[in-house]
Image (cartoon, rainbow, N blue to C red; front, side, top):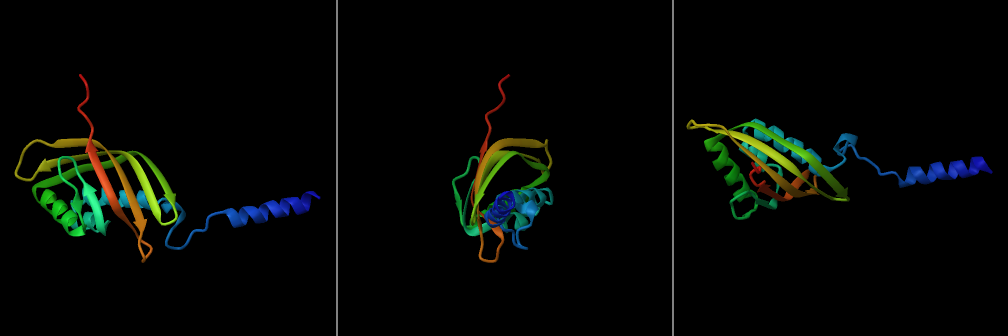
Length: 157
């Protein structure tokens, strides 16, 4: 009696387990997590094109102190303009929490970016909170569709 029950449980577990395709290795469990890692890499490379390439054509990006940037063109221009005047010396995503279901991946956490003006000046570090949503594209890649960053309030002294 135990052997058929064990076999049934193993079969049920095999059918219930999520399937992974070649386009989605185990390490890329959450599409947004993959994008966030690529964003940090692009920021550290000071590569505006690589940053913009992470966004869907109809994505919305909200940055601290700016109105919503709607569409890949506006997002690309924002990154290009900002990185034209600033050099990123450090970028990180931390305390990240991810949730994914089907073709959608979401997350929230903290970020920190340190820049130095290319014209000279002191480094500036921006610390904030982010939340984002990514969608799997027809080609299997993931792109940000909504990305919002907010500055954290200054630390109390």
